[in-house]
View (cartoon, rainbow, N blue to C red):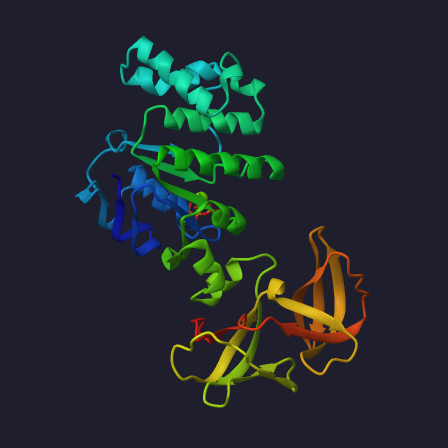
Length: 363
Ligand SMILES: Nc1ncnc2c1ncn2[C@@H]1O[C@H](COP(=O)(O)OP(=O)(O)OP(=O)(O)O)[C@@H](O)[C@H]1O
Ligand SMILES: [Mg+2]
């Protein structure tokens, strides 16, 4: 059983507060992903858990015991970095054996462990090679192996896939997920790639400026973002966001401002609960994948014109001109949209997100 608790931890470099009173709990065997923009404090938080950085305030607990004062080598934590940091002059076998040799483990046991780990990661045939004779994906598997070989309590991974090409990244991601499930090691994985976060995580913690914006399952984060930051960080292309006004007492009519002088009224057919009555300015969010375009004059939807069309294989991304705003929508891949074509844009029922002007979810 391995749980991790971060209790109100803070960390500054000079005058800059990089982690700001951050609290969260990681459950036993959980795969938790830290997701957030560059510089939001992901690596720093991970390094604090590993003991490579000290915290200024707060507590880090493993299984309920404070580890603040325990040095990194005694924390039983394995960390995998973005650059694999293999020893270049050692063979794969020696790279894998090294952490165990350091601990004075006997030769027989080391041999057995190397065998196990290399089978698990399917790198048996690479054991006698040096790192420079390996592809990026293979090097990354060896780095994972070197971290795994000493049966750590906790696995920390800092963007371990970012040096791999797109195809290898997706493949290695699948391997990591399978491994983590198979071994049941409590894991924190850092990425700024939202698709990677969704694919891997049991839960995602979205960080911004050293603060947890939201923590939840990939589906919660994607379907019920609590803030505009989370809403626009998850999903690609990002969620459309237009200012408007909303009055929950008037049959859920949203008025969206499509230019300085023009507004458009939109009947909200939501079944989602509304947190409280709300009246005033809002940010109206809707995802491209929930938004569609119909050509020709339509009596429902908002008048729009195709501005750009980008086929991506599985579907086509349309950029639509709606008043003076640009809105992204998805069209089926077999559609043949033409630039300048006029029509109307509509959003799937139940898929409009409303946020207050300061970015908090209203409904
Ligand atoms: N040793 C250090 N000294 C001074 N400032 C630092 C140090 N390490 C990190 N920082 C600053 O702390 C902030 C958070 O850095 P961190 O590496 O945790 O970000 P990150 O979320 O991992 O970003 P990225 O996605 O780019 O890796 C940054 O503004 C960074 O410049
Ligand atoms: Mg980082």
